[in-house]
Length: 352
Image 1 (cartoon, rainbow, N blue to C red):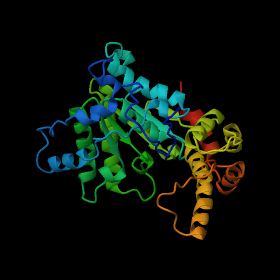
Image 2: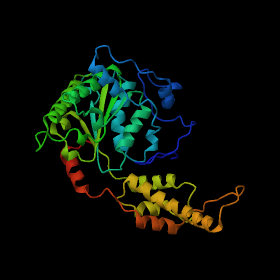
Image 3: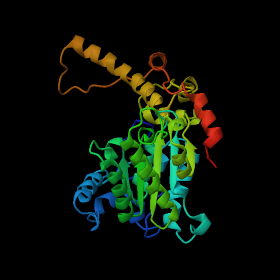
Image 4: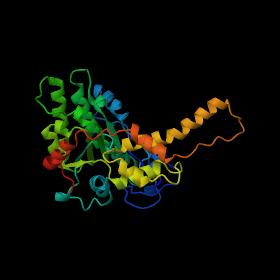
């Protein structure tokens, strides 16, 4: 599992890796389909649509800066676990592009998917895999992208965003931390401008249900219970991205600590000791364990003075004691709302 990613941690990539699922309007197979990074290098974005004039053209130019023009270098196989989430996202994005003749009528592809779960479990990482592997125009949208201080601009930005998505179709619109944009309407202190922006977003997403536009909405949140109910209806699939399983945690430790550990350090024991840790927490434990041999080396170098430039400096291995100490100082950060996620999944989740 070389090149494994965990939430919040990017593993190094090599140019020799070309395996993985890719997709494109032109079908499957051939060298171009096995090289999604090359797709980013070769592609040229179309100019802004002609109907965007005046201030709308300026807004379109601003939103175009949120289109991924470089590969995030995250493959499906780089993500440990989360098989159900990966399968559903492929079903919504990859397969309709491969076999458009099958996804018609009642079998039209899903138009919206919500990824929810504790922080650090890989929601944004899944979105990066979509951007890397699927040859669609990927819009990486946050609250700052479509919220403006100028009256009326926020709803115009939302409309222009979906105009651009249709113009560059097939497109994926990724709305990160969507709870910041689409909290329940009618709440205390809600501003009129915020309500108009929310309404426009719902209208645009509802328009996608007509089909044939080639636009897919992928949203992520840590607080799904704060979302507007009308948005949940439009996000047809709601997928819990859970804390990693023991097998996934073992795979993460094996990759993150590859070549760094003494022979008696057990990856399985580390996985057992990190029950309740998110992917980001696992990365913190691995980094803390790897830092301890470095600290010992730095202390020795400071006592001995500057080393001989010709001498080779070797970093010692991570010991069992290093791993134990790292676990003692690194605590899980994502277990506080476990019961609320379970309850939301029972009421609204759709994982099948």
